[in-house]
Image (cartoon, rainbow, N blue to C red; front, side):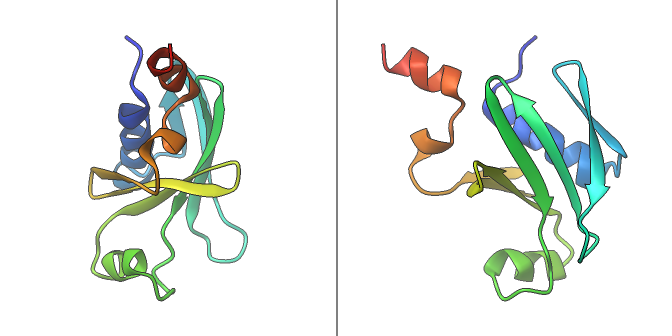
Length: 114
């Protein structure tokens, strides 16, 4: 069964932050979870359909509202595509940034644009 874009992001968040896995499995492929060089936060680069994404654990030592949630003990992961933040997952709840269609998978966009 193929996951939706939303399910894929939540799955990566769950495996990396909640389950603390060293690798994330998505669509039968394993992706390593590694610490960032400076802050030792967890990050994972992965592919979903034709899109390359990065999941990055929220740094609690910044001034954002997401960092505030992380300081409160919530599990927060930001997702980037082409260097831009597209979504985040906070304790299993997904939220997209900006225009929803910019963050959707390319296959979803193609099928909607027909």
